[in-house]
Picture (cartoon, rainbow, N blue to C red):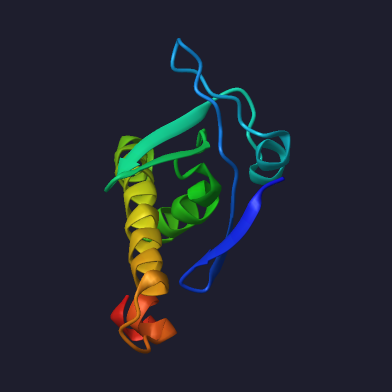
Length: 126
């Protein structure tokens, strides 16, 4: 049974895993289902932690419609539209990862209060 603990205010579950002679592990079914794993995982070293999470197959495609609508409203079309779209779509994932890293740092910090606007900015800044 997984142990429950907290990191800052974020509840975490932990389970000790065995590592095979071939350096393989099995993701517990509960975690596999809860996190939405499929056939691939991403593995990242963060400090002295190994983070394994479901592979992200969508690289900003969830914002494709909004990106295209914005570029079209600015008057882009043809190859110019395509090039601008590729550039904008390529910026989505790094921006989201930076926001998540900032939010995680704030969540694990014991150093006081931070507002929504501090993390995400205000509409006037866009």
